[in-house]
Image 1 (cartoon, rainbow, N blue to C red):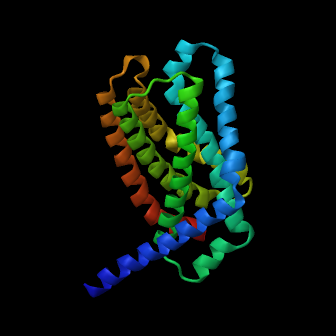
Image 2: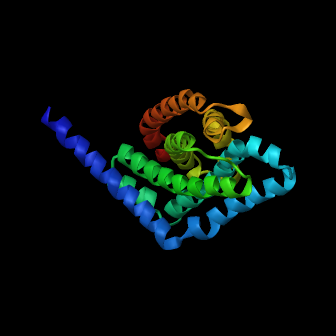
Length: 235
């Protein structure tokens, strides 16, 4: 019994340390700020030029926000694991006996935080560029949706980023592995955000069941990832 109570805080402490390390690396490099965020905003602007109709843009704005998130996530995940494998940090952590569950959790939360920050920029861009109307109740739905979706995407991105990290051609392999798996999150997040934006006549209340579905996805991906991450990066 005592082992159980001492192991859990240790795991969480290691996960927090890894999360802080990843976030500090990002703050120092400013890749999200200087590269990924501008890249995602350019995607939103290109969508605006391609569609060129305010009514259509308002209708499809939720889907465009999450498509831009998916594309940007690929860049963030590839960069994160490229840094880890280039300097041997991932192997060093494994040799040091770091619990792979803590490693997975810490990196997943760090990725989720970065995606949340990115989505704030994307939602603000949709608000100003696509003339999206957001009420207070809708803003709450969007906030919860972003939080839950980014948690789930953090788990998925870390799991498949670790899988593709040591493979040849990982730059092309990662999208092939990742995009089909994130489809449920993309659909759920888009539907919930539609409700929050009142797009296509959707009511705000319609967004909560989709947010609940995102929570289920996040739990499933978190459990599966914590079990599978260790064996995947060992191979």
